[in-house]
Length: 625
Image (cartoon, rainbow, N blue to C red):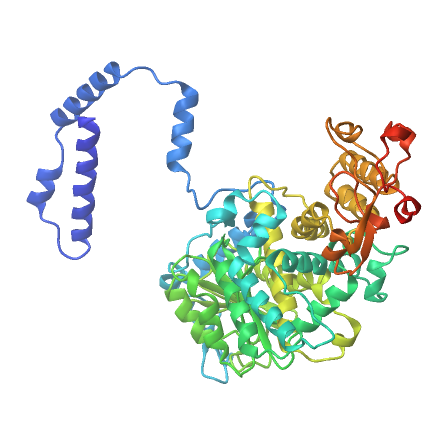
């Protein structure tokens, strides 16, 4: 232990001295004092051998496990089974391309041969100027080429609780958390109170029923994602529908909740949900080395949407939705604020490509890619587009009449291949979010209305489902090969499960036996107990006179009184049901007056009473005489 501490201390001193040499001239005497003599090295080796002899032998498996545990980064674990969009090795140049790059560097380092003869010198000498004043050259300075960022090596992974999610609802609840559910719940109940009238009164919504509503919305996206969909009420029918819709809630209740969500709600309420989703998406995910920032179609009316997605997984890491005209440079700064000085690469859309900003990003350890169009003010004049051009740390590579722009990217990376692999990430995420959209759950009357809050809510639900799907596949406990449709189907079933359990346990008249049997089938529970209980209830219902053994015979010492009382009195069971039934008949044992509906008649032979034991006045005629 002493030897190891000494060696660490020596390394620390050497590191401090090395830092001092970068600022001042190193003192030769100090260097001589730091260097170890041969005798010191021999002493260190002897002490190290003695320490190793004293230590017990370590098992090879334990040693390898400890080595891997010490050297591995817990935030950058490799997930081998995840189906990446592309591999990092796909971005690297092959051997032939690397050889061409080396030859071009050697040619650029050689001095140019003197021009002989009477030939007219070229107009540009390999230099080009863009309309905005940007200088480009066919050769690159060797000093600037050394400033390229190193190869990218970040691995996408979940962070915090997202690393241990094991099912769809666990991953989804990290992104669409309880605070967002409570916000929706307050809004719906407030709209229900405003719509309350003297004739129509609806019970307030709770969290369990709200989750069931969201689960049915996800299932509507699964079952109604065709181009020509039928009406929404088909999902509640016996012929063409699904049992889970009828078991969770009625169609009228579902449409009522949808109408409350489409009520008068400002843009600020939708922004609160959106900002909360963005915070959760940024908190529970670590991006890979390849990011994409681009504008996508926005389903919200009169709004603009810009996404920042991980190109390797299509995860939405950040996004901006705004109704106002915003500066593209500010959007880029806001979207990549979490990745400064991390050595990542960002592929910018044509609207967000700014060469000056890319140079600034390179100084903050972020390389950039983009497509420079031929009509751009940064396009070099009279460029034949036959060979790449260089301008500072930037590079232009011709591609189909346009050019791929890269800044700060490592020379070992194929810029054209990297751009083609990463440029469509934001569009692909949007397509995934609309593939099984919850907007298919909107009733027909509400589709004709323009409601920004409802439109933004649907995109929030869709984005949360796609990101949760990616988090589950990245988790070691999840299934990396899970299909998106299967994930959303499981998510809808999980969200409705608690509601189904409640309806199964409650003994209400609205939930029939057939519905309870369907709920048992959906939940995967045995229906034997339910059938036995229903059989017992049916026997009691159809056999009114069934007596328990302790009530079969009269107690000892009981004298039966007359069946008819002197006056008509109110029947107590009828009084509980707010019925004013009066009767003269009464129980011959407890003397409580009962009407014919609450009195059981038995003959004397069945009871076992002899004629001589009959009480006086038991018959009306006898009492009258």
